[in-house]
Length: 261
Image (cartoon, rainbow, N blue to C red; front, top):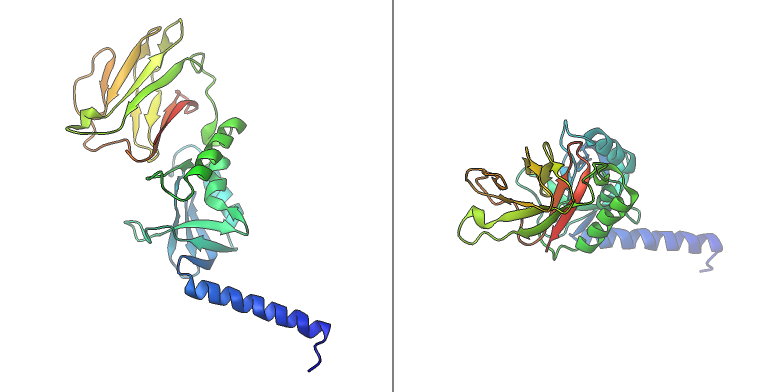
C-alpha cells in the first residue's frame, strides 16, 4: 500500500488519540472532564454531576472578602472547558466531593489561584506533591502584593512579628501557642487584628501591644490577662505536619506569616 502524506497524517492523529484513550483508561489517577459549573473559588462541577474540590487550596467563603473575585477567576480559568483532573491520594472529602489538582493545558489551576491572591495554600502534609510549588506561588503573590497577600499599610506593619509557634499539643490544647512581639519603639493598637490558620480558624485581638513587649495566644481554655490570651478552642488549631499562620490588620491585610513544617 502506498502511504500518501494525508494518510500518514491521519495515521499519526489516530495513534495519538488512541494513546490518549489508553493512557486515561489505565491511569486511574488522571481523567479528563468538562466543567459545567463553578460553585465557588475552590469547587467546581463536572459533566457527570460530581463536585470537585480543588486540592491543596482554600478560597474565601461566601460573604468574605475576595469571595466573588475568586469565583469569577475560577470561572474564567475553567468554565465550559475540558480540564485534566489529577488524584493525589484521598479520592473524596467528607462531603463526597472529588479531591483533585486541576490542569488546563499545562497550567496548574490550583497553583494559579494562589498566585493570583484568590486562595491560600491548604496543605496538610509537607510530603504533598505540590507543597513546593504552592508555597512558591504564595510567595510570588506576596511579591505582587495582590488579593489575600496584600500587605498592611498600618504604621506597625514592619515591627509586629510572629516570633514563635508551638504546634504540638502533647498533654493539653494549651501546649499549642503562638507568640507575637512588638519590635517597634512605640505602642501598637492591634484591636480587630486577626490571626488564622490555613483553614480560616480565626482569633480576633482586642488589645494594645506596648513597645518591645510580646503576647502569647494559647489554643485551649483559660482567662485572658494583659499579655496572655486563650483561643478557647475545643480542638487543635495548628496542623503539626504543615500549616501557615497568618496575622492580619484591622482591614484584613497581611502583616506577617509563619510556615509550620
